[in-house]
Structure formats: structure tokens, C-alpha cells
Image 1 (cartoon, one colour):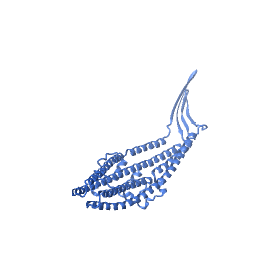
Image 2: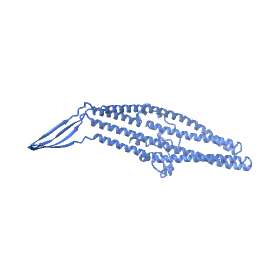
Image 3: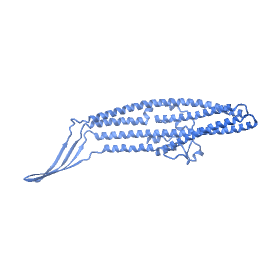
Image 4: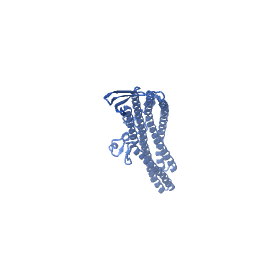
Length: 413
């Protein structure tokens, strides 16, 4: 399968210590390989190819010859008996069989392209689910770190309460803030379990005990992200499949027209009669296309060809629109991530300064919480936007079937 060869690219870079625990950790490359082998939808689509193989076999079949035996017995004073043995065979003079085989082969090739398109769709869902889990785990880490920070702040605040610098209401505010974060963490864990179940369904495996390798990082793409519209059209599996369906429909129209030229039957045999009469029998049966010239079949084939061409044109225009939108979205997300990254560095410094200032009694708890909330919101936005960035790149990969430099080195580390 051409597509299977193309999916063996590196998306995750992990440390040797992590890679050594291969029994418990799953990389994106391993997940893709398992998905192609195990996914039930892919297995179903592959099984449908056997139907196309059967259609080719049926198209190659030559009509069976007919064996005919006839006997008659007449009496007019003396009984006279006659017997005949003959074989007849239908002869195709318009090339219907070869046209039918050609149409069946093109239909099978179209199904192979559509199968690869289905596989690329499943792989897209797999990548997005895999990265969604990494995204949620990063959010989980951020919230856990935040809870740990509030524990430290709580310890410092307790010391200040004992010293009489602040009131106990400060401790109540910290506890309330920590409970809010814990509730967010519990909701996140529910989402994480749901995404793991989705991953398990895609892999047709139990993945609850598996840990995914890597974490989401932002990587700007190389200039070859700008994909020519002609390339996008020429490389998509669904467009290739639809183009082949147009060819199959064209062959079907030729077959329908050939059907208007009837086959004829040739019969040859042996006949004998009472009294020693015997001899060779030969006959030809030729249907006359006076009324039935397969007019209905020809019109149906024309309609199918017109529908296939219209569908192909729509798919090409839709592909151009889809690629343009995805490229525009990726460029926009890239700028947003760059801006958030710079802002986040500043906010982390401000939060660090605010913590030190609070511990020394120079600012209030409310000012510290404002700094922490601002950093938390930016960190969450950075991770969420990075996930959306890579999810969109995965969509662009599927929309163009193009290997993009730097993208195929992965968005996780």
C-alpha cells in the first residue's frame, strides 16, 4: 500500500531512558503502525477490495456453451425417429468482454485510492487524539504545579499569620483558590480518560496502562508549507480515486453502447434419422436490434459519467478551498503562538517577583493571585494553541498528501 510507506516518519523525539521502557510507553510511530494493522474501520474497507476483485473475475467470465439434445418420433404407417446433438456458443463481436474487464479494473483502482484516503483519515484522527492526550497531560502538569505552588504559598502565609502580618482570611482565600484548581484538574482527568478510550478504539487495544511518549512543542514550519494548488489537487487520494471513477464510468458508457450490438450464437452438431440418414448440423442465431438497442442502459451510463465528472470538479474546488483555509489558519496560529510565548516569559518573571514580594510582605495576596492567574491563563492558552496548530498541520498533511519539511520531524519532544 503506497500510503503505508508514507506514514513511517518521525513525530516524537524521546530520551533514551524513556525509550528503554518500551513495554509501557507508546510512540506516535508505533501507534500509527498498530492502527493500520488493527483498526476495525480500515479492516472493513480492506475487505471491500475483495468485492472489486470478484467483479474483475465476473467480468472475465466467458458465457458457458449450451449442450442441446432433441428427439422426435413420427408414425405414418412406419415409425420414423430422429435425434440430434448440438453445442451452441455465444460470440461477442463488439468487444464487450474487454470493455467490461477494463471498467472493473478501473473501479478496483478507484477503490484502492479511496481506501488510502480512508486510512489517511483514520491516521489524522489518531494523530489528533494522540496530541490531544499530550495536550491534556501538559495541562494536568500545569495545574499540578500550580497546586504545589499554592501549597508553598500556604506555608509562607501560615508563618505570616503566626507573626501577625496577615489575617487568617488570607489562608481561606488560598484554600478556595486551590479547590478551584483541583476541580479543574478532576474535570481534565475525565477528558483525558475519554481521549484515551478514543485512542484505544482507533488502535483496537486497551490503552489505559500505556503512557504516551513526548510532549507538545511548537516548531515553525519551513517555507515549503506554501503548497501549489495544482499539487494539492494531484496528490489527494480521494481526487485520484474520483478521477479513476470517471475513467470507469467512461468505460461503462462504452460497454453500454457495445451492448446495442447483439452477440450471435453459433450452433454445430450431429443428426441421425431412421433408415440410416445422418449428417452434420450447423446454425447461426442473430438477434436483430430493431427495437431494443439498449437505449436505457446508454442513458444511465451517460448520467453516471456526468455525475462522476461533476463530483470530481467539486472535489477539486473543495480541495483548493480547504488547503487555502488551512494554510491561512496555520500562519495565523503561528503568529499567535509567537506572541503568547513572548508574553508568557514576561509573566513568569512577574509571577516569580510577586511570590518573593508576597513572602516579604510587600504586596497583598490579591496581587499575587492576579499574577498567578495571568500566568496560568497564558500557559493554558499557549498549550491549547500549540495543539490546535499541530492538529491543523495534520489536516493539511491529509488534504495534500504532502511530506512537509520540519513537520515530519514532529511536534513533540
